[in-house]
Amino acid sequence: MRASEVAPRLFVGSKPLPGRHDDVDVIVLAAMEYQPPAKLFPGVEVLHAPLDDAPGRSMRQDEIAEATKTAGRVARRLRGGPRVLVTCAMGLNRSALVAALAMHEVYGMSADEIILRLRRARGAWALSNPNFEKLLRVVIEVRTN
Image (cartoon, rainbow, N blue to C red):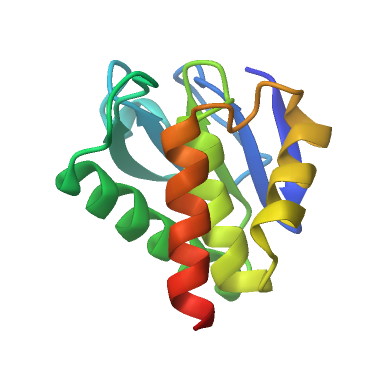
């Protein structure tokens, strides 16, 4: 697992191997195809948020709801002080979307600032799914107007 801190106490990374992860308090599993049971990650809270990463199709309403609900749960944890690791297969799109939505909610960052931070930390392909970037921008626009 390779993870990067994208905001205070918020990390984005690839799928974590089962076992102890003493450097974080919460792990979010955002890869639809990787949803091991929480008991395989002793000592941390595990949030399951199975998302699909299909850039060629629009997100379904239930997927949008899952991403925004999970981001809200991440935001609540961050406000309370825990260190949160949001993961997916490669730590680029699904995890970046959930983290991005939480970053706006907690830190009030703009979409451009969030995308810049994610790409600096995770590489140019972070949040490269155009549907995910569009969702981030729409959510921020709705929240700020």
